[in-house]
Image (tube, rainbow, N blue to C red; front, side, top):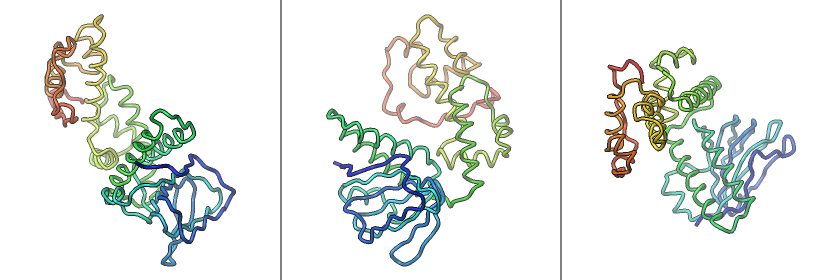
Length: 281
């Protein structure tokens, strides 16, 4: 079981405050940098960290960092067995720049909320779960480690924004040319960045969002299957039926009646091929 010692979310310390722990702490420290800081290491090297940098300090490790001006970060101190961290092959005691900072910050926020609430029922279990997710996300990010780059980070936030618009309004007729025009990117660049950030294609995500919306709409027996398909963004009912069966291993009608349960294979979020006959996602 992972135990939280202390944590902070959107923490402001005095400007230019110095943190100096030559012998570290007894716990692990995961730190997300939210303002420019300079980090010093035991080998007498130092480096400047831009907002969005992260580091996981091991227990008993030299900690020395200082804000260049405003001191602003989120963090969690936690206890756990060393073997638990090692199983994720996480590189510790070194700065890295995750592409998906929002996911990491969301997890730190949830840990902080549970830590403050101190709910006796399942609170400890939830914090344990969130730290596990944080370690998994860290391991994934380090597999695709990025260097700090202002243009790269700006593109990331722009793509996150348009991705949210697309998935929240999945019934609209989105197309690659439209997205590329909004972001001022070529198709190859767009696909490259999207896959690097989200580890999938925009087409797969959009179709999955449409199918999930269709599933929800099918619970309303006041509308027909065709109406549910159109309201979810599918303009061809045969295309919809084919994708639905391929994904969930049952027809929309069977799903509505509750006759078929999703198989284990269907729950693995399979890649759905782009139907070039439709001309859009």
